[in-house]
Image 1 (cartoon, rainbow, N blue to C red):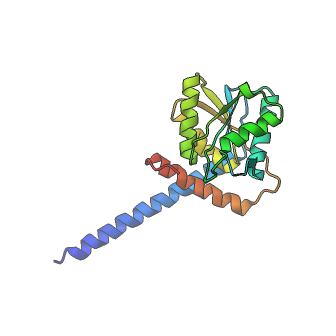
Image 2 (cartoon, rainbow, N blue to C red):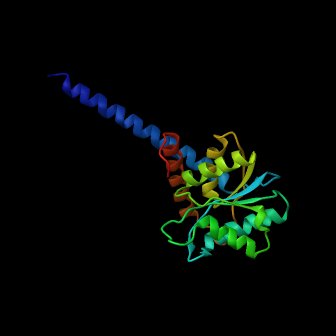
Image 3 (cartoon, rainbow, N blue to C red):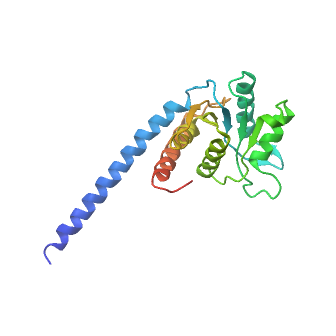
Length: 201
């Protein structure tokens, strides 16, 4: 009976240590994600991979359009012969993010045959996994990852875990918001840790 308080104390100490370790990991990853978010590593690759974002009745949102425009710029610089757009329906009964991205790029002069589309991804992990599988089937070994800066670290790690080379190239932001960005770094750090233990978000 006298050992119970000691056992409880040991459990609380272990929980506190685990929580402290988690916070340190999140802090460390947030710094790494922040460093990656402003780094443009664009270089010749097999494909430009554009992460999907919201679309509205067949039209890309402002964020998605900025990603697509940046991918188009890289394509015109001949850094890759193909662009892959990603993203599923997201509750939309007719359109998918990947399909909307494809239509947008075709409307700006990219040949349809130069665009690869992934239209089933329901999350970052799902879309990246499907994109990696498409790349494997097509014999593509490297990608320039285009997304918001805070997104790129996690996507790169997921592609690299599949044996692929990945280079980050964040889309241009009109008005950087430091507080919002820091919060996004923390969320992406948590998402990365969840992915490492098998939880896809």
